[in-house]
Image (cartoon, rainbow, N blue to C red; front, side, top):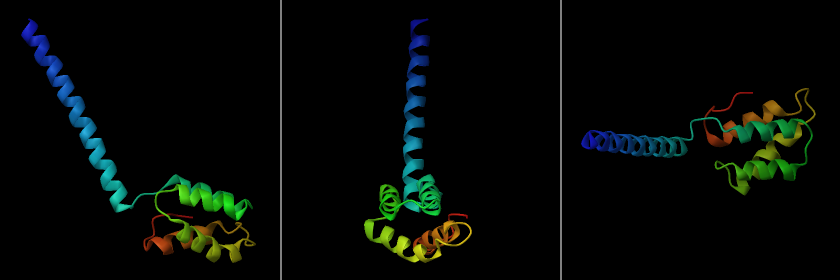
Length: 108
C-alpha cells in the first residue's frame, strides 16, 4: 500500500512539473512571436483617445514589453495629429502601433 501511494505521489509531482515546463515554453513562444494582443496597448489607446497627457500614454507603452522609448515617441508623434477625430484618435493610434510592429495584430 505504501509503494502504491508513493507512486501516485511521484506521478502527481511529475505531472505538475511537466505542466509548469509546458506553460513556461508557451510563454516564451508567445513572447518571441509577439503575435498576440497586449492589453496595455489597448489601455494606452483608450487613454490617448480620452485626452490623457502624452507622458502618461508613453509610460504605458514603455511598460509594455513590445516598445522601447523611441518607438513609443514615434507612435505618439504619428497619432497626435489625429486626436481631434470623432474617435479621439483611437483608430489612428492602433493603426500606428500595427504599422510599427509590421503586422495587423491590434484591431480598432
